[in-house]
Image 1 (cartoon, rainbow, N blue to C red):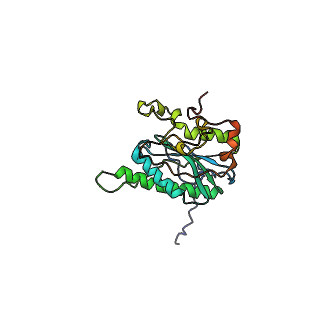
Image 2: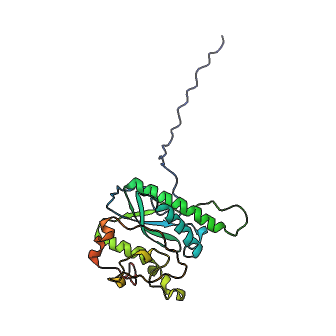
Image 3: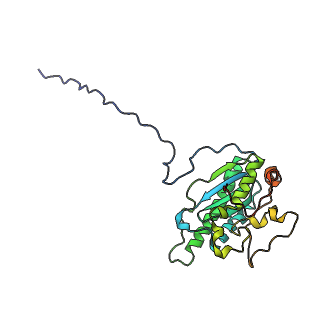
Length: 240
């Protein structure tokens, strides 16, 4: 008789469950977590910080300044997003912005970053052989802090406009004649304590082209911050 083949029964091998990972892996040096941005009201300005990659070099040089200035000209055309003040440090940019809502903030910052990246890549490639650089310019998501009180607004204004003193850029002997930072929108700020009651500004250097910003519309950046005193261009942010 032909033997009948029996089915082979094999116990299934238990498998370990793996934890699902959502989104892209965090890049080395990333400092801003990928979380949903908080709800934003049009009456609340926002302090934004953008960091650049090392390949860009220092932003506190003439070519980089004009590259960022070109991006401010693009941003000023938007109706739902306004850059009120900004300053350029060596590795990052501080901005005070106003936006109609969270979506307007996201789109406005995206437009500014794209324009700034194109201009900065063009600057980096200038005078170099080969194709123009097209790599990343900004290293991470931008940091955003919503401003909701007059004291917070005053601190943010001082921090953005006087940030060069925090980083001790004013210790450079070549900048000894500067009252405020020409790598910022300080020239367009009318409420320095030293200018109280005086409509005349200190004249800018010959050939200086100021960063293009817009006047604030929120109460906090127009008058609310003044409850805590005017800002001197000699203040050092975060100093005791």
